[in-house]
Image (cartoon, rainbow, N blue to C red; front, side, top):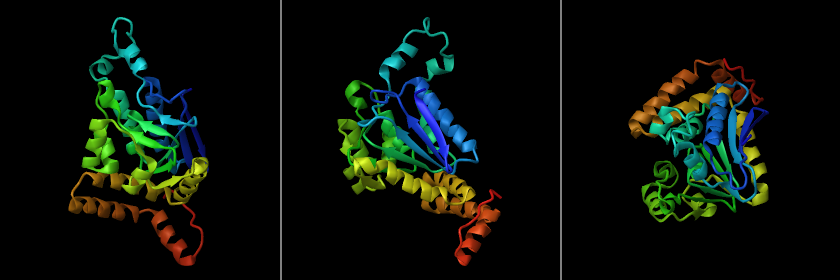
Length: 263
């Protein structure tokens, strides 16, 4: 199994485990998509962590050998649907979408190089915690394909994105932090603890508030300031119809730990 899912204390951890460099095969991307779709439907998970096994590479990007085997010959790959033959980008697109539109906040815990599609998964997340050894890049132009510039633009802005896209050069976690894309850069050996600390903080919040908040932010992101804020106001009104909203105010006023009910 190239993708492992563990849910504990309301934290779902999705771990890519495909040695030696965690390259994304079609099967791995489909497994990640299923994992985040199932997390979205689960009441057990309040927050998700996207992580990867190994010590040096978070994800080296797409596994080109796997894609070539899968799509190069229709005669030898009768199990590949016509939809996938005509739209070979569907699988990776749905993988990114599952992360970006997950119903819970997603923390990317990046321990090493996040390249190509690996960077796309990170950019589709909500918050990024990085090891001091992490790097981020879109090297696709160097191997004859196009990279995920639009996802990278969420992290660094249009001009830096274009520089990275056209040069293929990676940048460090510290530089990503200076541009505001990475929330925190920590010592390599402290990454798991730093990720867990943030995940536990988020998991303690109202699960309904987290999900409504994630929906509102996703809907508002591509809108104008005025339209986006109107969307957030609508979600505020929806949130106050749940008992958890009143419980949040009551527990704050009474200086006690809140008790969430999903109602």
